Image 1 (cartoon, rainbow, N blue to C red):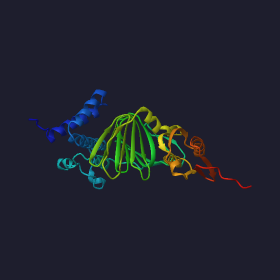
Image 2: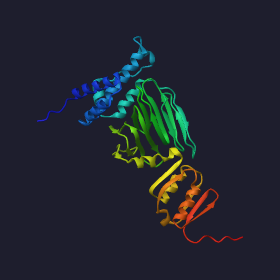
Image 3: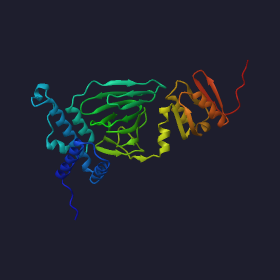
Image 4: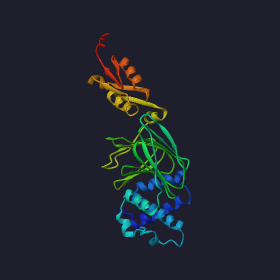
Length: 325
């Protein structure tokens, strides 16, 4: 008969893992061992998050010195009891909320791009955030974590190794990384899309946690579960990140979907009047800021016309209109 591990045993093992992380960065073999341990029991992810939260709060209190009096700071939150900790279960969002509650956070600094603009933002620790068109992030570092919030748009995070985790908030989800590179996209009316390019990240939310390795994508709703991650090829990663070079890559998307993609980067709109033409698949790499050039190229490929009318390019099939002089 298999004997289940007790909650106390899981908590003790989680505390040991946190102690190892605190002493020095985990080696590759230790990272693999930790991942295997987490997969062994669904309760372990929550225990690890709780242990990390308690460790961070303890470090914060120690930094304030032995004379620190919580009452002098307007009723600072007390350390959670064991009963409270156990009631959290595997809730990553609650565990991280405890960290935030116990640590002072500096006023965030906002960075934004306009339509068609791509901008690199260097961060205080040497990490960077590349903002795609119409993107807004807020950055707020403190002694315990490197915190950012993606309000809207798309951003590529390159994370340098640091004792503090980098935490990206998007909606009510949190993405945690210590090093590596990943892209997060949050567009109106679309699910949150996370693509891990290098390294490993953890996604927290909805009383659950997911670990994502390199070449993995996760598309998730803001109101439902985290969803299921799936592997992506190197070619798919390259196409997804083509915007970093000012390009848009298509691999079978419809012409209508391509027109919507160009609308993110330019005030010039592509209007397709023929439903059959709108459903045609598109393949290729195009300049993101040249929708008119794209329209001319696909018009030639599909035997259509591209007619410019002010800030609109109309794609249609059929005979060219007769110009009256």
